[in-house]
Amino acid sequence: MNWSEFFHMGGYAFFVWTSYALTLLVIVANIISPVMQRKKIIKRIKRAIKREKLQQAANG
Picture 1 (cartoon, one colour):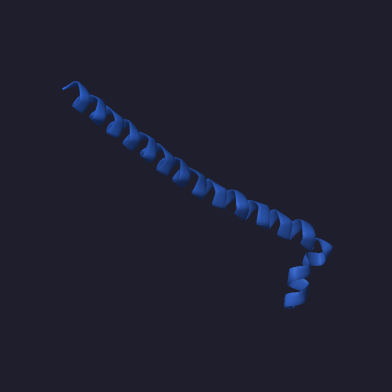
Picture 2 (cartoon, helix red, strand yellow):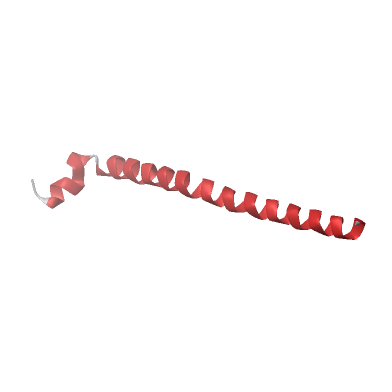
């Protein structure tokens, strides 16, 4: 078996490599999505804390 045969996958190369690419895409999305959501939540919490401090300073 040479590299050309390996990459051709016995005539099923399109389906095999497409499935590998989609799987990789899903794995990367499953890693990146929670990281982005975490950053968004942290920003939201920081804004809420800042707003709360400003309200306390205005009231007290």
